[in-house]
Length: 398
Image (cartoon, rainbow, N blue to C red):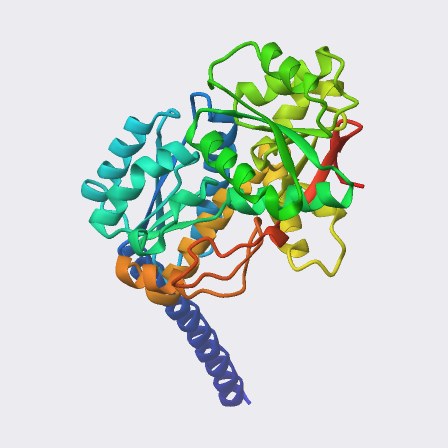
């Protein structure tokens, strides 16, 4: 009997030893895997955003979005075991500083891909630098000139809908409402100049007559003369194409001059909730084409972007206690495109470029991207939705 009990105790002891040994082995294996993963070289993304300066209300949410995404990816182990390193520079809404930042990212930081800049002018300043270095650039700005002609922009992509898309969506809406005579205002920035060109170019296609074509500087503080002249020409609608303080000034002037009987349209550059907070009731009735991300809750359940826009909005708003903007959405798309390329082909710039150029069906905040060797934006006018400021918020235009 004693021998039998000793035998049982021995078996139990052996079982305990084996169990402890297995736990230790699994722990060592997990530790080895963590060390191995962390020892892998980081995949580097460079970012240039207008965090300060006149474009700060665009660039700040872009930076917040990019950091949020990369932090979450690294919490989950990175990409294929590689940590992702995001290196962000503030171009201060200045073309020279954007160019210097791009050179530093390429030569000093040795990044594989650059996202940004925020605005069209800064993006156009960085384009030749990225092209010469053969580093993929995924701009967050709107001007079609950033990615055209494609044979001279082989390494350049962008996530914001082009001016053409915004103009055509706006004109299509106007045509459906019987609007035929339009007065336009635009600032002299790269964004304003590009938008003005598209407004003039596509008006005849939609039976739109441009009865006024007023311009102003990005630092102008009085638009009374321009609006007064446009009113004298009795247009059916007014379009303002600018970003920064002047788009606020345009709405205030329209309201102060008692011109609200003439619908005011803004470019997709107006799509920041901060504009509504600044303007309050003054913005009521303003119309614009914009990314679905800012009205994700109003999208039908079968909308292809419903899931990703809702997830992004929930994560961003929980972390930063502020609403998402179209501009943060542009950065979301740019960073996620870079991460998708890393996952598929690694961090070699040439492979990233080729991957992006042939990517189809990528569901982002700005639309469903279908890139090609002929199209480095991958979006159409259908990726924009017409919205109206109603009761201090964005609402689907009626």
